[in-house]
Length: 124
Image 1 (cartoon, one colour):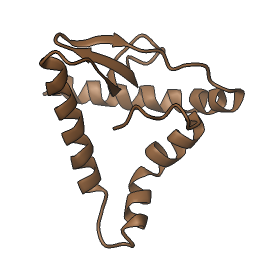
Image 2 (image 1 turned 60 degrees about the vertical axis):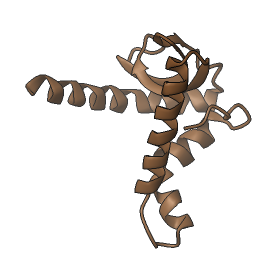
Image 3 (image 1 turned 135 degrees about the vertical axis):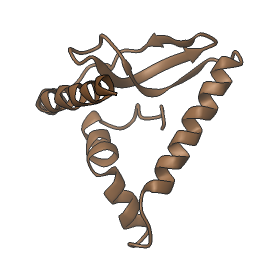
Image 4 (image 1 turned 180 degrees about the vertical axis):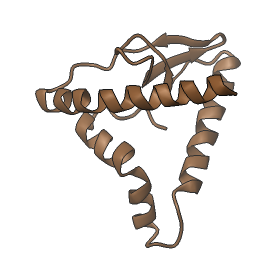
């Protein structure tokens, strides 16, 4: 998980990190493994940063949280964490027409997947 994405376009981030992230890792390992270790490392970094925030350090990193940035109940965006957990959900910034088109295209599927997760949790 990185917050150093200002120099990359949204479309590049979506294509590489979201759509093909696991494939990119497997390809880079020349078929000798999966993306599991990368996911574990991302989880470690996220947890480490949350612990820093709870100790009083200000930490900004991307997180999938309940949000009002979009019409989806949850959304991933830069979040400022502090002693009280989520201190501020930061805006996405301006999207180009190309990025906006892809954003609009993915939103129905994102909302459907969120609802599927909510339904699953409510059944438990």
